[in-house]
Image (tube, rainbow, N blue to C red; front, side, top):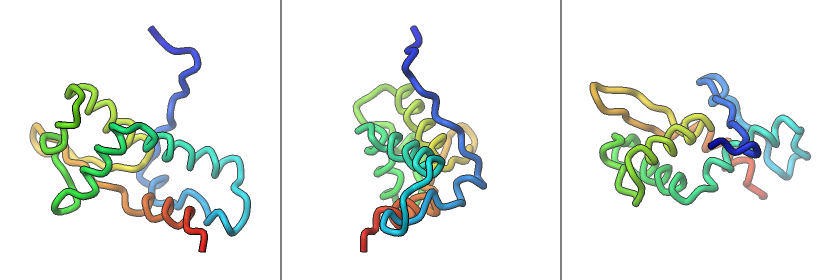
Length: 121
C-alpha cells in the first residue's frame, strides 16, 4: 500500500555531494533550492535508526564500515538496507561493493557543509 503523502527523496550524484548544501545560516537567508537540498539531508538523519547507522559508519575504524559490521541496530537486515539506501540517496553516505559485501563511508564534504551551515559564530 502506497502513502499518497510520501515524498520521494532526490538521488544525489557524486558531483552533487561535493557541492556544499548552502552558506552558513548567519550569512543570508537560504534560497528555496538550498532549503530543499538541506532538508533532504536533515530529514534522512531525522530517523533514529538512520542516525544510529550514520553514527556507526562515521565512528567505525578506518572511516568505513561493512554492512555486516553495522547491521545490529534492532531492525531486520532488509530494513537496515532500506535505511542505508536513504542515507546514500540523501548524499550522506557513499558505498562500494567488494565481493558480496557493501562498504559504506560518510561523504565528508557533505557533512562539512552541513556543519558549516549550522555554525552560528
